[in-house]
Length: 375
Ligand code: UD1
Image 1 (cartoon, rainbow, N blue to C red):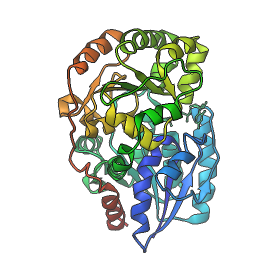
Image 2 (image 1 turned 180 degrees about the vertical axis):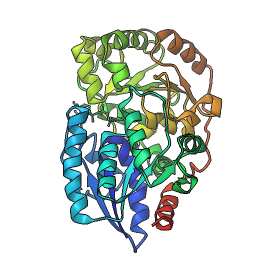
Image 3 (image 1 turned 180 degrees about the horizontal axis):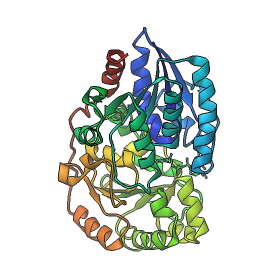
Image 4 (image 1 turned 135 degrees about the vertical axis):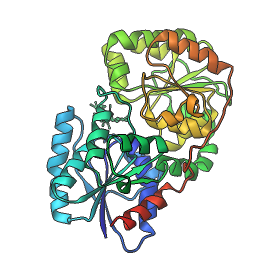
């Protein structure tokens, strides 16, 4: 059996690592790894291949940045050549980035069976590019590999027949479980001095449970001045004076802060870090008093680690991570009043780890079995 799997952007890499490892155990499977190149900076891409022992991609499409149409269009043109040449039995895509959607369309048009890892997540928010990518991918997939039972229910409600759905658990937690020991050994002070941006005015001494970590890069939070400015005001005047606030900054967020003239204020009050490697980010999450984030993956990691998490979005495709389902995360959108209230609440709460069903570190093996079963 021949499988092509696809990665494109940072959140894909921690999902593909355990899958590559599990495939390598199965001698009957030939595996070709394709990197579309949507993320290309060393810190956004190569660093994860090295840290997580992901084999070098067999094919690199070098797509790079661009508008959504440019990224999806270029990826389709290049990926079609690969599928025509390799004639795989399966194309396996992960997550919800532009590479996921583009390669799904190509696979189906080439009559190749398509499997989607992390199927069935729905935010219901059609302004999110990721939601469009999820819907297209799941509509086309022959095998839908879901991380939780809520996703199964979403797919059933959309009319997907049960024989195409396999509930396998969350593959990102395979990576978390295999790497948390290594992350635990990282010393916080050396992490900060190694990764702080040189522009920083604040490089604090950290101790366990006395600092906050934030990440924020989604268009809905950083693309308009009206949204971003009050968020920065709150973070710099109400969170940062209380405890050190660390922000490993995504290139898109940095660009927007500079554009809106907010960069100086941020540098003076928040400790900015380079985009972090997998283990460094996990280490910060393990020691943080709280997380503020608009990332999907961090909501899930906070759930398993029990880090109180303020999710800077109005909706989430990962409701299993929310407090009402027993998780560690609260949806606070980008309204300062809501964030402030939740912030006060989490200051008085402590770490409460929770493990949703099948988030047990063995999802990749279940996926390989499902692919063999559905071959
Ligand atoms: C993408 C994903 C998003 C994911 C995020 C994680 C889609 C639709 N979105 O969003 O789901 O949460 O990745 O990072 O696929 N850039 C660099 N270096 C890089 C990559 C990007 O400087 O290596 C800059 C470029 O200016 C680029 C911008 O970041 O235009 C945005 O990158 P892009 O991949 O288009 O989307 P993300 O916002 O990263």
